[in-house]
Amino acid sequence: MRNILATLKAEHDELRSLFEQINATTDRAEKTRLALLEKIEAALVPHAKWEETVFYPAFAERASHEQQLLYTAAMQEHRAVEQSVLPDLKACDPTSRQFAGSAKVMGEQIDHHATEEENEMFAATRQLFSAEELAELDEQYEQWKDSGMGAGMTLHAKIKTGVASIFRVPGAPG
Image (cartoon, rainbow, N blue to C red; front, top):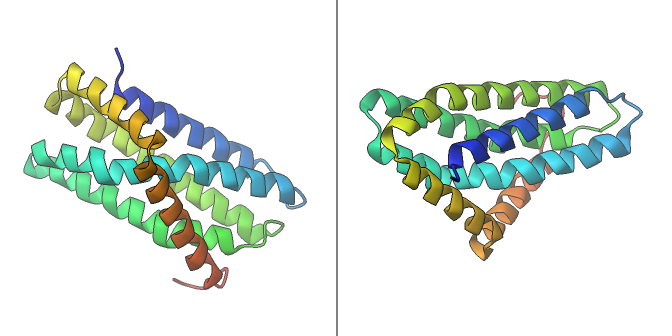
C-alpha cells in the first residue's frame, strides 16, 4: 500500500545523497556543482511546497498542542531555507570556498530538518492518520507534482529564491 511518509522519506534520502555529492566536489568542479545545485533545487522545492500547502496543514488540523510545535518549527525551517540559505548558496561563486561552506551548512540544515521530521512528525502522523489516509495523501502528492498547481508553485518559489540571490552579498550577514 502506498504511504506518503515512505515517499517523503525517500525524497529526504535523495536530498541527503545529493548533498553528499556536492560536498565531495572540489572548487574546480564548477559544472558539477552547478548541476548538483540544480538537482537539489528541483528535488527540494516541490517537496517543500507540498508539505507547506497540504501535508503540514493536514497534520496541524489533527495535532495536539505539543504536536503543533513540530508544525511551527518545520514551517520556520522551510522559511529559513527558502528566504536565506538557498539564496545565499545560489549567490556564491561555485568555484569558491564560500560555495563549499554554504553547501555544507545547507546540507546539514536539510538533514537536521528531515531527521526531526522523520523521527517526530512522522511518528505523530502515524497515530493521527489511518493507513488509507496516508495512501490517499501519497496519491494526492503524485497528482499535485504532475499538475499545473504544483508546477506553478514550484516555479514561483524558484524565481523567488533566484531573485533573492541576486541581492545577496556572499558572506555578508542576512
